[in-house]
Amino acid sequence: MADDSSPPLKTPRQAALAGAKAAAGLPSFMLMASLIGVGGLCRDVGYPMGAAVASTLLVWAGPAQMVLFGSIAAGVALPLIAVAICVSSIRFVPMCMSILPLMREPAIPARDGQPARKGTPTWLMLILAHFVAVTAWVEGMRRLPGMPKPERIPYFLAFASTVMLAAAFSTGAGYYLIAKLPPALAAGLLFTSPIYFTVALAAGARQSVDWLALVLGFGAAPLVALVVPAGFDLMVGGIGMGSLAYAIHRLQQARRRRGEGA
Amino acid sequence: MTATLAALEHWSGGLWPYLVVILFGFLPSEIWRWASVFLVRGLSEDAEILVWVRAVATALLAGVVAKLLLVPSGALAVVPVFWRWGALGAGILAFFVFRKSMLAGVIIGEAVLIGAALLAAG
Image (cartoon, rainbow over all chains, first blue to last red; front, side, top):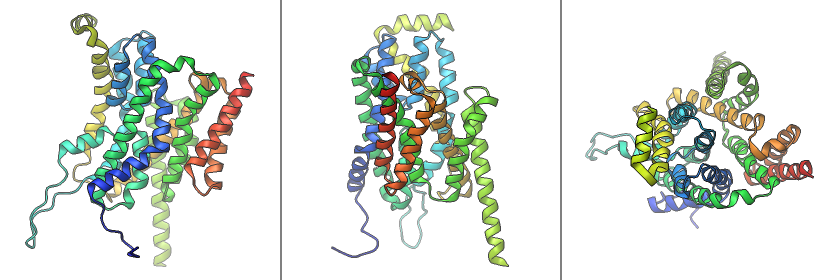
């Protein structure tokens, strides 16, 4: 074994394999558990199994899928459902904006005899963006920064498509299975998202600003829900508490710098 | 609008459920992902503004978790509130006790919750 401190760059294929492997355990399991219910909701409105699976592959956001089929069942007008989904999906903006720059390779002009290199093309960025949802975001934010840049896109694509396929399979299975589940197990399935997101966020928190955002966002949620109209409370709480965490982080930085200067 | 939708439903026949998923589920959520691709143009991965954006995303997600437990749906609502938070606390504790093992956190949290759900039902 070489005792080289920086291991050789993985080929795209090796990086993709590593991504698929990382996805195969806990992340896939948790997505399967949380999307199994969507299949049952879809059957309740009399849609075919394929529509449930298509919703996982295309919408790729468990809560939005539940809103979609749940509201159809409740007789809500389709354009209103679209508005509700559109509002709740604004949360993809900060998620995509923070993870996409980790993967994009900038364009480099020709210089010193080196040929010019094209940056990551827009069509590929759009595909990468489609795979962004909570699971891929928490795992990606945790793992990508420590990786050499060329490995990140194949790793992320393989990771995200593996969990997506597992989730799609589970959505289809849930279409037939969900009614037969004992209630305690059903409660356990619904609990997978909160517990998994919590430990994944804790595992991914590196700097004090991450911990601050985590604790403030969590603690303020009940208060924000009382004050802000439903549908907007998550976004308002996220921007408010995230900004507060960032402001505290900047103050700490400034104080540290002043301490060094003195 | 309603008449147009009814006509579309009639015209699309058996494909209507798929059209619903695309028009009223996929498009309204996907536009935000696509918009983000254009919003981050020219931002490098260590741009200062991204520290703030990441803090917002983290706080938002923490809020999602809190809301899932505050206003639980379906079978989770049967579990008493004390045990919903207790199971989360047990999971976090296990995560740290087992040297930041996510698996330990999820398994212990789930075990406490399912146990409480069984007791609540019985």
